[in-house]
Image (cartoon, rainbow, N blue to C red; front, top):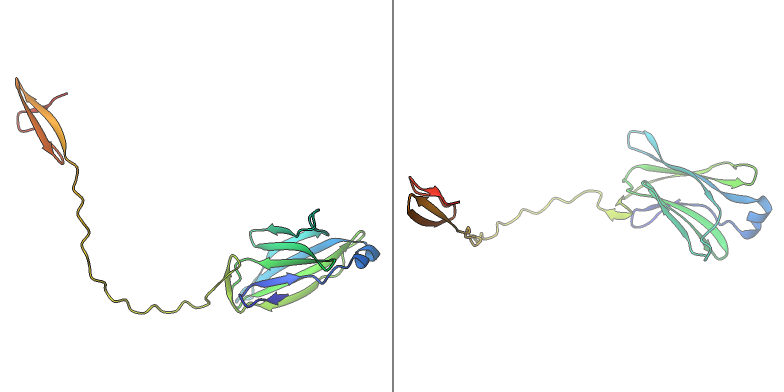
Length: 180
């Protein structure tokens, strides 16, 4: 397990060589990744079995979960598995446990814990402490141009008399009714 300069933590397995896969009939890995907060409470982030391999064209397999990202890739002919927790918090302990799965059984878990030195949000580094903002200097207030309300017209009637009234909110004069 390693912590990068950007604060991201990555759990990974050693290389699975083709001869080891064949000799020990390795079919995949079993993962358990958990986080321990500052109060000592532990929460499992992900727990899963992952079959050995990569895409048929040789490209890495990448899967994203709510709590992290998992990847399998081939480097120099050997298969490597990795897991990166999402949204790492400085000071939290991240425990990565991985076991080799063979055709007939599951091996012992190899576990490592690393305490995060930086924060990440969705794999991107964020400051641990937000700096205090410098006092702002009030800018010169420039009044915004006033928006003229649109005037509308209505026709009002009183017996045989008619009047046209134009205003923002037109109303008929006393005794007049709006023409329908």
